[in-house]
Length: 310
Image 1 (tube, rainbow, N blue to C red):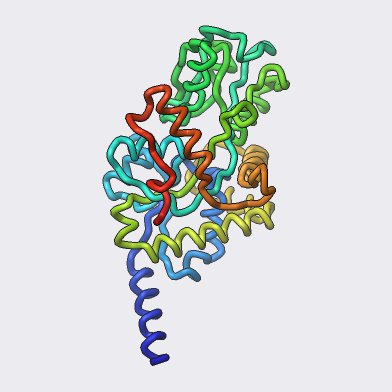
Image 2 (image 1 turned 45 degrees about the horizontal axis):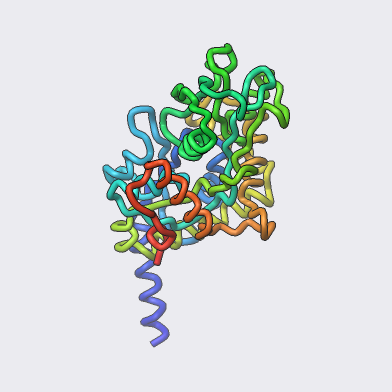
């Protein structure tokens, strides 16, 4: 009997290792994805019995396109993005939630309050991520003129924009390095104004999850272990991040990646429990669904139950 159980477990592990999970983060190599790099580099995926290949997206092959085309089995998405995709007819399952807080900010030029700049030209990512900003702009009757940008803050720095959206772990620090003055007056943090909706989590299609539940669970647990290790060993984690950055020829620097890692780890700690919970919060899903339905970004309510691995 004991031998049969051991053989069953062994066979399931071997089968899982034979099937590679291609994991595509939603952006290029950077500290935003440090926990996954750590899980690969420290052997956590191997220990969990899963074979993982990390492949970053390109300009012509964004992460979600790769998932739709079965070129990867898992990707990272913000909650609002995931809800739009589910509403569009592709059921998804959140197998691991890393972000517990919203990182989006609006930075205005010349020390102006973003809430006083009606009709302002405001930068927004061409690949998405700005759903809450659009909701806020309509609610407060700001009527922003959205100007799409790909991946940097140059338009804002040269004065072509009145304000720009930024992530507190990414573009915010790019602006600081460019010499932009940041104050409580010209920086609007969405998490402090009723828009604290979680962002990054790991998603797979529900079809894939139904056929590979155990493999998905192993991948999620090993990824969680990677993030926990990263929080406990930030300097060594930064070394691992820079290896991925250099391998992928990303134009950044160690100072920027150190700031990003520190902020990403901070955003993983829930404001109420003060803990790194790694869970999707039902109240934040309800808030996101409500805001997006009010602004006709969703055709129906997307529920917490639709997104979790039940």
